[in-house]
Length: 296
Image (cartoon, rainbow, N blue to C red; front, side, top):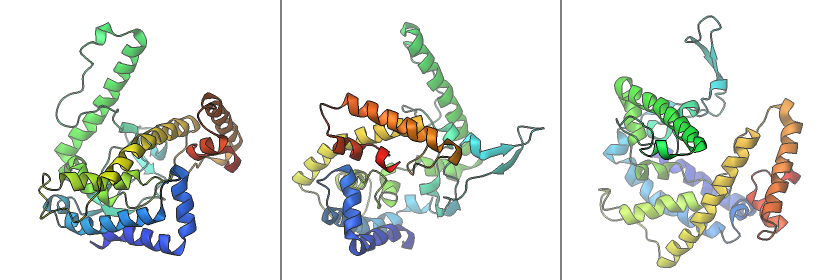
């Protein structure tokens, strides 16, 4: 319970102590977002988190664990004599002790492709594989190979570490509210509002006790739907840019790559500006870009 409420408590305190900074962060995503609405959503979350914390399905995976959240191949050191022997794992600085149902995830190097299906079904090539052109075949084969690796990890968890398997299969509507009570780098409230609207709609179907302790008006829901597409477009853009720059949401890069990455960021931003020059002002484009060049 204390863990569940710690994030919304912290965010409400931050909004009270530094309202201007929170407002600036919210405006990075959309000028229509307000500190008042953000605080209202946090208070709604505080009404449901105690209920979810006591749900048997959540309690089953609530044991506290430490989990490496950025386990890519560059962070794993193996023996030069025997590559199957792991000698060390680095980059633990962001690790935290938290409930298993929040932590459990695929390692970065085994992250499944977009249309991955959890369960015991073996990944296969699409039925129309022979009808695809060479580029499409190559992409389909790559996704099938990646899905097969992810499936091996998933089935290994089922066979040898079932608590992780069960935590990864937990209904998203049950665990997501614990992770959304904060503003992410892009400043959007959409993830928090989205998880709360799903609870509002699905409360009874999820087998939760009583009735949902808050409501959303039709105007609230319509405004949310209008922002969802903008949010999805923003996440898509950020993922592309981060992939090209080989960085994360924080923008961290090795010192030796600073100048070249800075130039690449400026080059990509200029291309983006040129492509959308008829739709966005320079100021609006800078708001959408994860690392505006003037701040690089």
